Amino acid sequence: MKNLFLVVVLFLVASNLTFSQKKGDKSPMPIGGMEAVAKKVVYPDEIKGKNIKGEVQVMVTVDSTGSILATKIYKALHPACDSAAVKAVRSVKFKPGEKNGKKAIKKVIIPISF
Image (cartoon, rainbow, N blue to C red):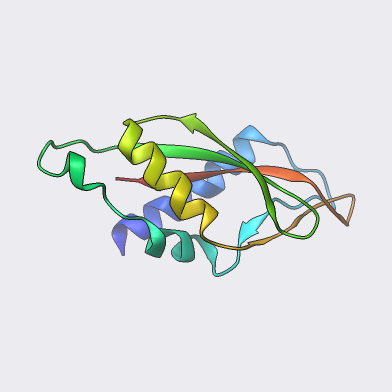
C-alpha cells in the first residue's frame, strides 16, 4: 500500500511538472487509477536477487478515445524493468485527456516503482 501511495504521488507530481495544465485541460488517466497499472506490474525474473530498485517513467500518448498511440521510456532503470513497465501500462485502458474541455490527444507520464 505504501508503494502504491508513492506511485500515485509521483504520478501527480510528474504529470503536473512535465505538462502544464490550463483550465479545461485534463491529463489522460488509467481507468481504475494507478492501482490498475500497479496490479499489472511484474517484477522481472532476470533481476530478482540483483537488488535493482528504482523507478521507470513511461510517457504515454493517449488519443481522444482513450487508446494508447505510443509509449516511450521517459526515465529508464534497467532494460527488463523498462519492458515490464511498458507492458503494464499498455495492459490498461485509459480515460482520454482534455484540452479546452474537449477530448484530445494528450501525453502523460506514468511512474512505476521497482
